Image 1 (cartoon, rainbow over the protein chains, first blue to last red):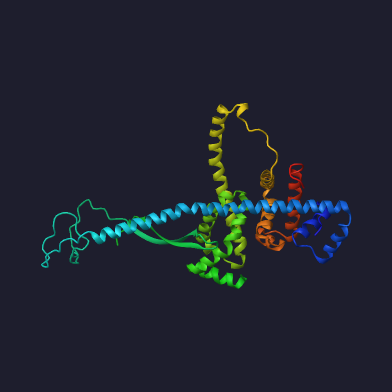
Image 2 (cartoon, rainbow over the protein chains, first blue to last red):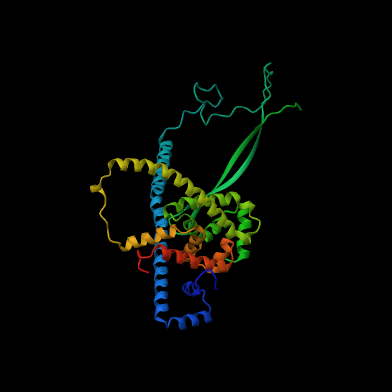
Length: 177
Length: 188
């Protein structure tokens, strides 16, 4: 494709080295290359483009290399997290269970309630509202879903983490109903 | 990957299908990274920007009405994100550089300066890359995509939203500008 603002010969060179030249254009170029000046010009053009491509690819590959090297701390973090989880699991397994509460459901010991304590019996408690009671604001909850993509060690492999974030909006009520 | 399959994957991903999303990322991550590199010219920033691009993509996937336009849509997000993050990075760097320059100005003396070196192969490559970075974005982006993805003019044109003829003209001009800026520094 020729353009008035640029050298037609350079268009031909570009189409040839980009693999976009038609059969007719290649034949034309072959004829033109019989001229030593044109041949020298084309060789310089192609050599510069080859050097440019090599430089760009080498530079771009550094991105992948830096990504790989930055994954080592992630791996270390993952290993540490696994180790910590294993320690916690071992501790839970080794620590003797708390003494069982009497079957009669007697009073709980003072202090923090056990996770394994029996639940309070269900039921509503009616209490008189204090005089200075302010009606609570109403909360609405919506869920926003998004993803985090983490490249894995193998090229083209990714860990996609789906995140569900619950967002709460608080709205005041001005009417009783 | 054909357009019908991309359309199905986009529809599934929009409904929250993880495997479809995974397929889309695998299919497009390579050229998205090339596009980011083409925009910012900084290999060390590509990984962070790509991460941010995919976050934005999944946040906005619902807004993609026509899956056939997925590639230009992704490119627009990648380009905008790359420009934003690069500008932010440059702001931080200019602050750090001005402090470092002040410190160096206090320490530097003629005897401490590096002696001139001959232009090695590595320096030639650096000169080439510097010349590419110095190109206007409209020339740099198709040139980098052409070399990194080996895409046809038609594929580059679809991504950039320009005609095939314009892609070719930009490539010719990019190479001419490079040759001018490298005159006498790199054998060409």
